[in-house]
Image (cartoon, rainbow, N blue to C red; front, side, top):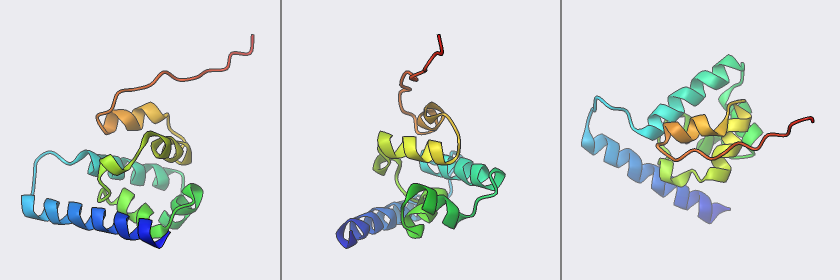
Length: 112
């Protein structure tokens, strides 16, 4: 676990350095857009950042990186994105669209 956390920390710090170097931009990054949306979701659900981390079974530092838009969207795979969507009670395809990804068909169970 410590190695994966160090790798994640390096990825976050690299992205943060890149954003600082790039300076202000009119268009927020997709990761920042997702983070802002997720912050609004957890606020609406009356969850704290710690609650969000606990629902996802991740460390608080990782949850903060996601919510602050510092975790590069390339580090969020579809399985993790699905878990995030479930934690904030939204359809995963909405989060995929925010990250500029293709949507996937939803699996529905019809009670026929």
